[in-house]
Length: 67
Image 1 (cartoon, one colour):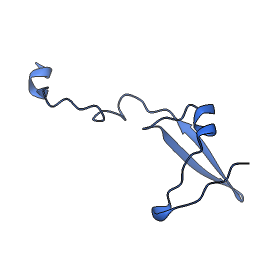
Image 2 (image 1 turned 60 degrees about the horizontal axis):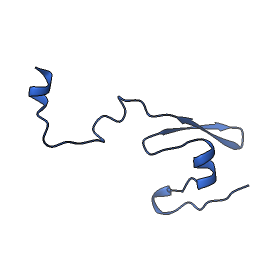
Image 3 (image 1 turned 180 degrees about the horizontal axis):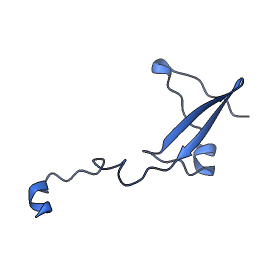
């Protein structure tokens, strides 16, 4: 069992071993479910629509790109 601490703002770190095993990356979504006295986490991979805006290019003109 791996333990982590809950920090200010109720944040915690996903241990590297778990991130690697489940291929958890930035922008992925974690679904939390309570089952009795346990917490179950499920990873949802980020899709293209949920990461729009992460990559920014100030040289692009959105009006021009839609023409």
